[in-house]
Length: 219
Image (cartoon, rainbow, N blue to C red):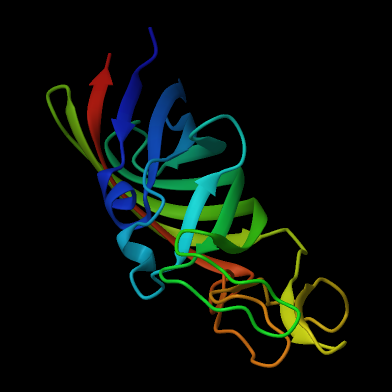
């Protein structure tokens, strides 16, 4: 019977509110395949502490936002021990919204906004290929997994908040840069530009990825 492993990644769950449940199966002594369903378990994780109005959500099946599939090449020729090179693909549907932290009076063509109202929202469909260097250590059935790597986003969505007709509104045309996926953190009004957050990272379309997983190995 081939070896297989089941693990959880508490580090990304704590920092990003995204829990990956890793299931990995040995195909050959030096090759494995891994699937990672991705669950959104916290709408306002530590990762977003700088942006109080910002919330994330799954846009697929309940808290399940998507999944990742990886092939692992074990440099020592022994699955679930030593160093592994992973090549994979992830697809996930994530939603982002900004929620008012206080009341806003009406202004110009805009209605008042009450605390708790949604001010702006968007969806980001992750389609990313990845390369990760990982390290596995096992003690009996218990295993500890670390990994660090790079993802490349295949998507081409863009969005920016601009004032072209006298009112600040979201645009998704050529007026937006390719590395912009902006969400307004304040009500969209006709006279004052809102604070915005760029959902894309500073290195877009490249993203750093990491994991620290705990689990078991079955022989």
